[in-house]
Length: 403
Image (cartoon, rainbow, N blue to C red; front, side):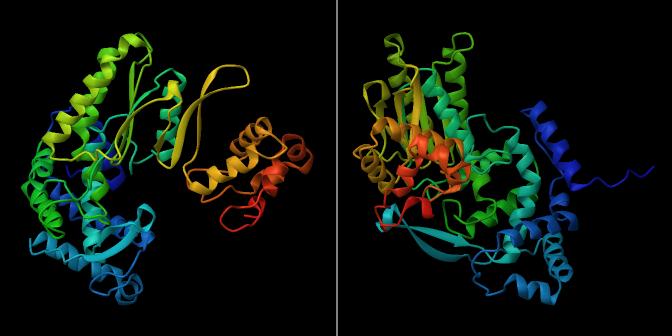
């Protein structure tokens, strides 16, 4: 009796369940699913939805649509099945970072290569999602930076105020291909898939994962999984009932570790930092000592994570809470502008609460949004929100409420 063909969604679900239930299982027979037209179609739609800059071959999605998507994907499938597929050289594109003082080099693959990378990701992602830890949030399905921010804020409220703020030096450029493929091979027993991954990695250089590649975020997370496991073990071994003495959050290469403030747990700072350095040394990942630091929030310190600056402050009821604001110079100027105004600092704190409550500021925004104005001028006047809206933008002189 012939079995009915399984859909891509059901296949991914079954793979994830198997990977989660059996952490040592090595999957085989995956390459045939990578080559299926259903997988290639889904990978093409993913690539098309992201669009992006033109590739090195100059072929655009409009050109592919005009010539025929089916023929385009059939050619890719034939090359994969015949083992004649070869990735094209990536297009290098420099973009500024750190305020324009440095540049980040993006490696932009051709559309055909993005489709192949997407197909591989669709099949391998449920395997490694079963291995990824709860503290990892970067570029994962059904996870977001907002959840990582909330995780850090909750830990601060629970009294974990000693902070290890780690900055990894050129992380994505320092990933060792041999170590990465070894981690893949622990879960994948399919030489064709390993060979295809090796070609994808080599297309951008002798080490590192291509920034801009479809599969790069998943591979970058996989490379740091052992670091996450070490931190999860530290949480489990130091836990007191339902209270954790260690907590962490990682978004891609941005890592922050929070440790309980009680004097008897002071030894944990050195112990956790030592283990972090040991695990990163095994991966040949360097720590940027200039940007990495240890902070104690109970002594008035602060640290940055995912675009927010965190502190510990007392609420109106006298309880300690996590206070975090966008880590942008103009926003700090706005704070000082409001605090020095006749309205006073207490009104500014109330204003900030309204901004949070009504969505005037979020992690993706470049400036406070004006949605809070919709709650009504009476409520805004009573809370001091109108004073914030009238405070000029430090960069442009425009009113904050106008944007």
